[in-house]
Image (cartoon, rainbow, N blue to C red; front, side, top):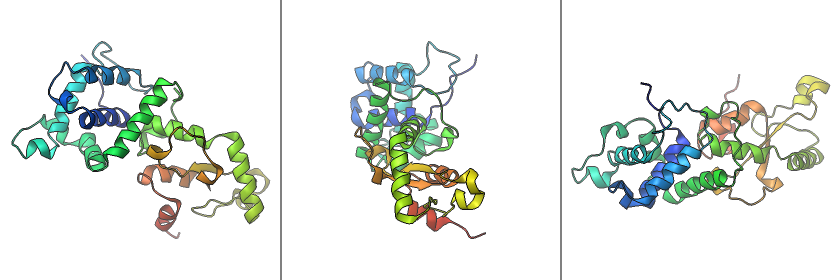
Length: 239
């Protein structure tokens, strides 16, 4: 029988947030927080198969994931207590290393996922290449929704064109009008520069958008969490 697939980044964020937020749930399977997270996991609009829908991300699955995290947690390993060794590798380890010292940031990410799903504002349709972004699929979809706000995009392009006389990528300086003529005139994408955990629910301001070409835009979401325009520009290699 086919097994349920490995956990996605977004799911692991919710699990690790639970691990830090409700220590009791690590040891008591009847803790109601486990059922709440299980229900949320089952509601996430992620494009992953569910070969065993009745057990998919059930309470047992969530509890076992917390045991995986114990194998990484120095609080347990230093006392000679071990979680399930499978949790000491792969995505669990990467997420632990990334957020164990940034629990407030992790909590904000988890809350963004929960509120986005509960309010039904997370798009169901996957974004191109979303599986490769470092912020997770669902937050990336919310991020892209903000970046595509037509009013803000038009306003940003107008302000930059008036100030500089051109629409060029703020990373690599590519101007599609200069490169492709009339066919490329006015073509550029907007990147929301506020980190996803800090974006909150308020409306995006025009000064929180940067103009970038599609290639650099994808690199900003793939290279490292919260990478700035200047940091990516410093990584450019001259041809």
